Amino acid sequence: MDYIRAIEAEQINENLPKFNVGDTVSVHYRIIEGERQRIQVFDGTVLKIQGKGARKTFTVRRISYGIGVERTFLLNSPRIADLVITRKGRVRRAKLYYLRDRQGKAAKVREKTNY
Image (tube, rainbow, N blue to C red; front, top):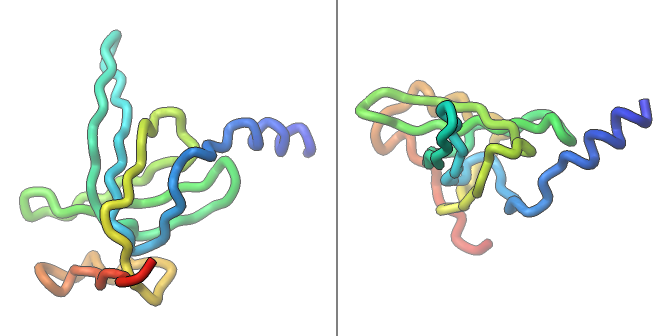
C-alpha cells in the first residue's frame, strides 16, 4: 500500500494555483492530434471538486452557443499546461449542480470581493 502512495505522491502537480468551487477558471489543456500538439483553452465556472491526492478531479461548465458544456479534468494531469483563475466566486455549496437548470443572469455566481 505504501508503494501506491509513493507513486501517487510523485505525480502531484504542485505549481497549480489553489481554487474553489464557484471560481471562474481558464484551463489550458494540451490536445495531441497525431504528431502535433496544441493548447486549447476551456473557460468556465468550477461546478465541483472531488477526490484527493493524485486522483483529484474538477468539473468546469461553460455556455457555448447557448448549450451548456461540462468537462471534467484530472487536476494532476500532465496535459494541463496552465490554470488561470479569472474570478473568485462566493458560494455556499460544495457542488453547484443547480447551475445546470438556470439560464442567463440566474446562472451567475456572485464574486468574492476581498480575497
